[in-house]
Length: 317
Image (cartoon, rainbow, N blue to C red; front, side, top):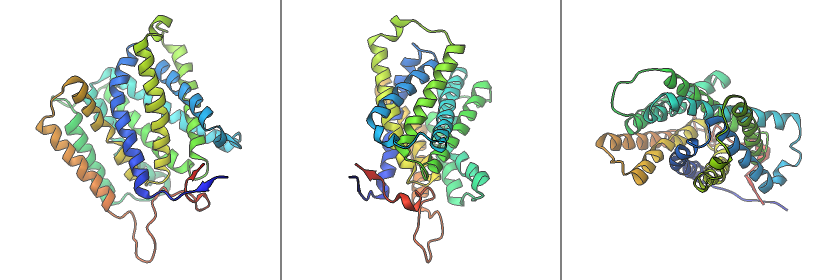
């Protein structure tokens, strides 16, 4: 028999923060792994293995999920997730890592406006101001010195930010109707199949000797177990209980932890410019957390991504 346990709201925000730490350090791992296996194939293998692992762990969550609505939601999530990661990697090949990180982080600005287009719910001044402040901070942390020009790689990275914004909104919306862990399983299975199909059609296979190397297998294990499986459980459960605008801001910290990983593993020096970026990002999160999302007079404050009333608290076996 399952028991319902109350989980405080801040715990879901900590889940998102933990995911960004793991993802930040995954930049180092991904850089090494993609040198062995091309982008679409790497994402396909990573996602498919993650989906199979999660299906084995959460098979009870899949009971009753073989229906059109559940599978369609999983297919949409799988498509936007794969496209986001694949387009981001294509963009990275044609631009600098600093620009790639900065432009990807613009999804936290896109989310409120995408919600506005979908739900007619106008973004608040606080949400827009916090998002702009957050992007400015990430720019100070991630951008390399030099001129800012828009090339093919930059445009592809901006496109990936659109897919990441769509993913955040889709997770928050679908999780109101379907079990979030079951959705995550299908998200990875469908995304993995798409990656392998595209990779088989467009990319050369590097050979079994390369993909069975011990270093590559260690990197792949990190990407599958931690950066995909654990992180997406944390993200999807967290986004089911955190408003989309706040969730996107917390997840944008991935770029900051990516820089920290570079400092730890490559001895990069934190400049005054980077420190200023940390201050701006922290200020943006404070604004997002402290500013009310709606008027509270005469009613309880509820997050925008609150699960449907009949879902109650998240069920823990």
